[in-house]
Every structure is written in C-alpha cells, then in structure tokens.
Image 1: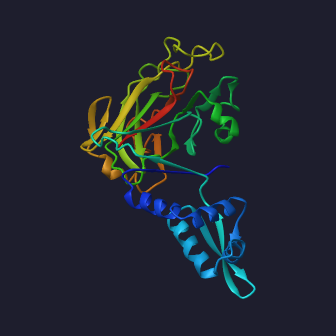
Image 2 (image 1 turned 135 degrees about the horizontal axis):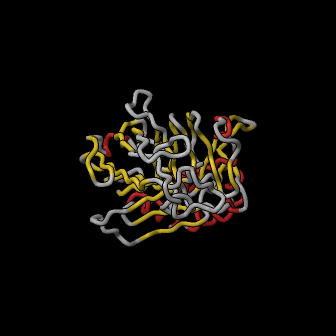
Image 3 (image 1 turned 90 degrees about the vertical axis):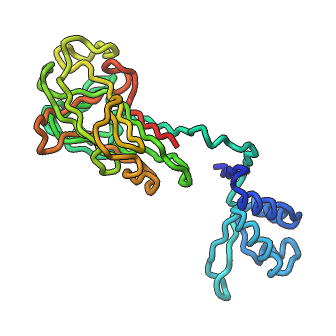
Length: 306
C-alpha cells in the first residue's frame, strides 16, 4: 500500500528538513535503492561505494526528514541498523489557510454501530431484511448483523458509540455537535410515555432530555413496508451542541459542560453514550432511528468545528 506524507507551508521545520534531505544527489540515490527493499547501512554503503560513516550521516538526514525509518536489529558483531523507506509520495501545500475560517470534521455511524450496550426487554433491532435475531433477547444485540440495523430499542440501559477523532492534534475544538432521531420506548407505543434520556461524551454527562413520548400514531415518513404498524414509528430530531460556554439541546442551554471539559484532544476517538440513568425519574427507554427509518434520513452524526 502506498504511503503518503502531507505537509503545509506553516510546518517550517518539516519543510526545511525535507528540503535538506532531498538537496543531495547521494541521498536521492539512497531513496532509489531503498525503494527496491530495506537494507542495513553497511549494504547501502557497499552498493554506493561509500564509507559506512558517510552512509550513516546521509541516512540520518533522511530519517530526520521522516522519509525513512531505521530499526536496530541483531548482527554478527553487535546490532545493525536496518533502513526502510517510509514515504512513497510527498504532498506540499504552499497555500496558507485563512485561520479566521473554521475547519470541520464530520463522522456518521449507523445506529447498530455501537461498541457496547446494556439493554432490557422490551428491546430489539430491525433492519432492511426484518428483525435481527429475536425481540426481547439481549444477546441479539451482539450479533454481527447489528451493524445493518435501521432502528434499535430498549426499555432501559444504554448504547455507546466510538467516533473517530479526525481533528488535528495542534488544533483547538470550538464546538461539537451530535445529531440523531430518538424517542421513548413503551410496549407497542404510547404518545405520552416519558423518558429521561441522558447523553454522555467521553464519560462526561452533558445533559438530560425529557422525551415526551413513544410516537406511533402515524407511520414514519421513511419506514419500509415491512416495519409493522402499531409499533414505534418516528422520533424527534435532537441536536446537541457543546460549545465553549456550555451544552445546548436544540438551541436551548441545558448544562454548563463546555467543549474544553470533554478532553477530546487526548483520545483517537470520541465516545458517545446514550441512555437512561438507573435513578432517572422517567426510566422510559429509547428508540434510535437510522437511515431509511423514522422521519429523518440520517444515522448518528458527529461534527467538530476547529
């Protein structure tokens, strides 16, 4: 698989290291030899008719520029350094970005793409081909086919998702937005079935929404024909925003938890948990709708502005 290296005009040290590394015909020839396969320093020196010390000097410059990797390996007389090409293509962006304009990282997970869960009957999963496993059987939530689910439901507990964190480490996150379609979970459906649904991000409680009901009096706009009437049909589109001054739900401030308190920079992923607290006043479960189900044609969407 091809290996790419990208850098921009603001990475001055990186650009200078690459420029120095590629400014010597000797080092360029070394890269040509390494493209054919990894070699120890002695082999490269012999192939290019160079003293071993000179070969090591040039290879150290290539390693400093991030173009090769050197690994210690046992040899007949102590350890030797094995050199491997680290980069196939280099892209240098010489356009300086306007720092006044925010960048956006966006990720979307299917409702069945949770990494862990705790569910209780009534519970189940339904996809394009029908029920996934059996209703009210907790072990079915661990079937591989769960990834195809278009709607999941449970009368209590939680589901937890892990989204990739694609924000560059040297950037400051200004806002995190989470969007999904959700409602309460009653047997069949009940328009007045309340549920206190809490959202956690990276283990931090960002707030609780009191859902007014489990909606089934009309069919969901997108529901496939094989989804039975008489069951939950659609939910409310909920948009959580965690900003620098607190957390908002559909534009209304709901807690003082701000984006800096989520410690997003320290992790390769962002963990989102959705569920009922065990001591919730209304432990009324939840339904989560994905694409082609309910009223909104989306899965669970996470957006971060930086």
